[in-house]
Amino acid sequence: MLRPAAVQILKNNESYYSLVVGVAKRAREITEEAFEEKKVLDERPVKKAVDEFASGEYKLIEDPAVRL
Image (cartoon, rainbow, N blue to C red; front, side):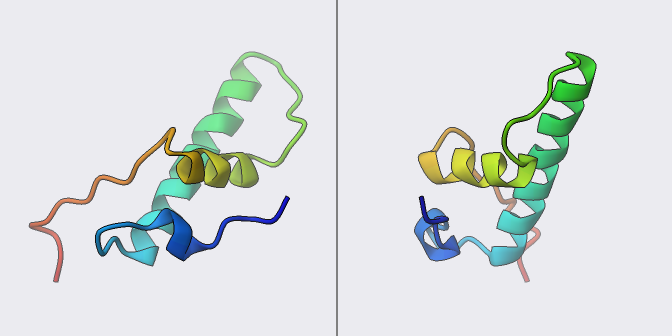
């Protein structure tokens, strides 16, 4: 399966930076959860995080006051 493009995930003028930070944070959570449960991951945490954002399971929430 091909990776989803960033433009397919981003909506309503969300920034690429927010997507990268969100995916990185979620990938870290996935890694920590697997470590705590002593599970072996069958796919990379970043790919799983991207897939979760693409499917809508996780969404970006940006603070409009922070925008430049």
